[in-house]
Image (tube, rainbow over all chains, first blue to last red; front, side, top):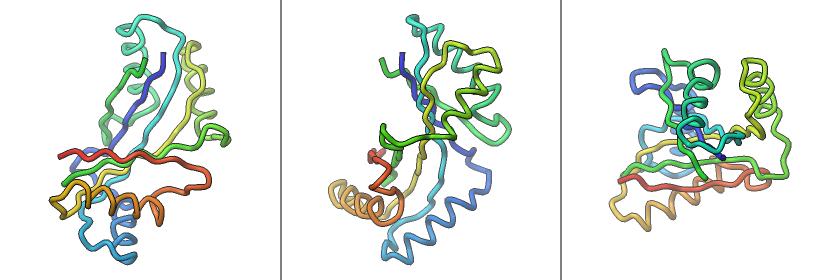
Length: 80
Length: 80
């Protein structure tokens, strides 16, 4: 089963990388852009047929490694 | 209008960061995980009401800054 994990900074957390992208886009001629934030997208494959078990395992991976629950939120999307 | 841009490495391109995550997950007790790849998720807001125009502008941003078309693919998702 394939899964995608979307990891994003919580809304109150400063995002200097997003700010840099925002600034660069303005310089490149896209003044309409506002509020850019950069997160991570982790795609993985797991040997587990049961979607509920796969999701539970990935939840645990997020808590232990993939996301920092203090600063980041995550969303798990099972693909097939 | 809000948009999400998913940037991922093309399938033939080596992904050492994904490999490191894969290895770390095995060490943490998730042997069922295979083939981890890490990409970027860029969320932005654009002052443009027309979805077609917003998408065209974001396509151009991807080609000029957000993605490296030699190594990466991107997918644009308009949120509202």
